[in-house]
Image 1 (cartoon, helix red, strand yellow):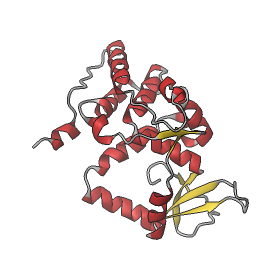
Image 2 (image 1 turned 90 degrees about the vertical axis):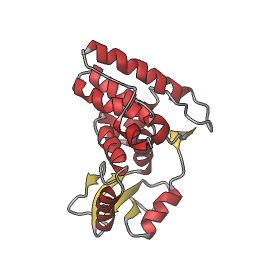
Image 3 (image 1 turned 180 degrees about the vertical axis):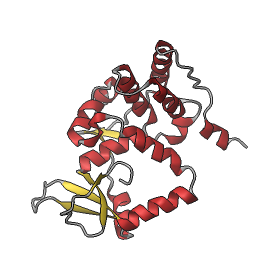
Image 4 (image 1 turned 45 degrees about the vertical axis):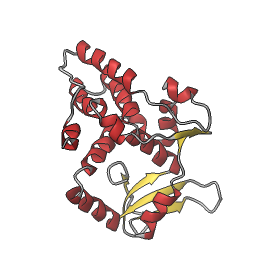
Length: 212
C-alpha cells in the first residue's frame, strides 16, 4: 500500500489517509506478484521484450530468480473463482487495529467495492520498518517492480494478465498455483543473450547475507 497505493484525492473520505488501493481485487493481485518472484520476473521479461522497459531491468530480474531468492521469498497462493486468492482478513485486521490502515466500502450494498487507505501512522510505520529491518528492502523492490507492469493499477486488468500464464490458468480451483522458476530462468537467459546483457543467475546479494 505504501509503495503502490495512489495518492488520495483532496476530497478523501478518510481523515489522515495518505494512499489508497482501490478494491480488494487489486490488493490481492498485487500481493500475488510480490509473493511470487518467478511470476513477477516473467511479466518483467515480457515488458523488456515488448520494449516498454530497458534491458538493464534484467539485473533486477536476476536478483528475483537467481540463487535461493525464489525459495526464500516465494509464498504460494491457491486459485479460486477469480484467480489467486488468500483471505486477507487477519492481516488487514491487524493493521486496522493498530490504526495503520482503514478500509471503506464505496456504497452501502454488501457487494460494493472496498477501498483500502494507508493512514499517516501506517506510512510512518513503514518508514520505521525500512530502517530497522533490512530485509524489508526486498519487498520494497518487489513492489516497485510490480509498478512497472501497466496492468498493475487495475484489478480486472491485473487478473487478465495473470491468467495469460498457462500454469496459472490451468491450475484447478482450490489447488496451489505452481512455481515456474526454472522456465523463467531459461527465458531470462535467452532474453539476456538477445540483448547481449551479462546475466548471472547463480548468486545474488540476498543469498550472500544468508551464509554463515
